[in-house]
Image 1 (cartoon, rainbow, N blue to C red):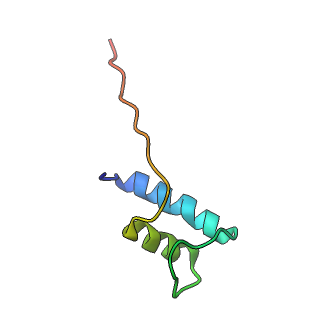
Image 2 (image 1 turned 60 degrees about the vertical axis):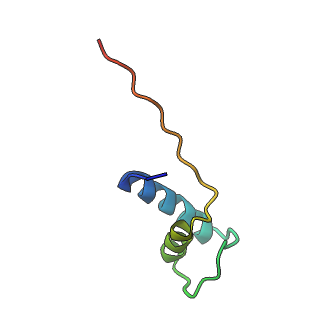
Length: 60
């Protein structure tokens, strides 16, 4: 699935917050920066976070 830059930012931000609060890491990390860890996890495709898109309704 292709994500928009806003969806990607939201996913990485949410995961970085989880990591900062002490959530277990899904990959080996060579840094302690939660944002860099979240970006690596996103790029590797190991995040269990999905995006649900709703179809826009037609306006009359």
